[in-house]
Image 1 (cartoon, rainbow, N blue to C red):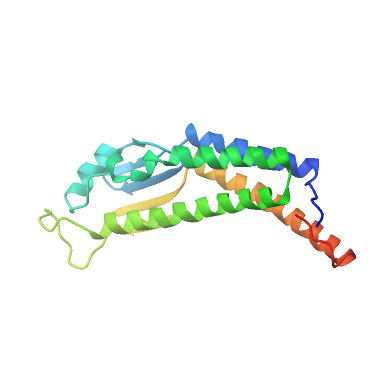
Image 2: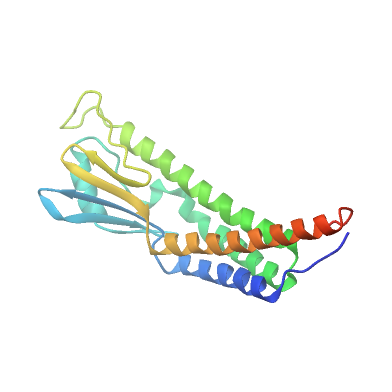
Length: 204
């Protein structure tokens, strides 16, 4: 088995990918926006790593009439541990860049990928619960109507147009994932080439 390190350019990309994720602590990760005739300028809620910001109170006031739950920090238990999850992934990414081993690079890429999938699944489950579990005593009831916000993109909900998608921090993390995809692809092609030259060699 050959313990082959990644080259300096790949190490740099891994380090950049890890350090870029630090922005998650200072920029919003997700956003949900609403537009309606009475709100032509739009209402916007931003989801950070540990808090909410934006027009949350106004959105709560509007959605109260159709029986939707009050949006608050307590609705997102993820806020209590996401800061540690990100810290661990960032730390491992820096370590992967320092030791420059393929297994560490692949593991770091897997962590970012699982984080992305986890966020999407979590947002879908939250949106489903928020849009379907309505107060039966609400002032406005539309039989058979659910108000689940879109996971990604736009969706019409009564007289509102809703949008959901990554915010600044989310796009930066996605870019980190793209950088890691480039590194992993390079490593895979290098390993494949080495294996073709020597079928009995294992690279780690």
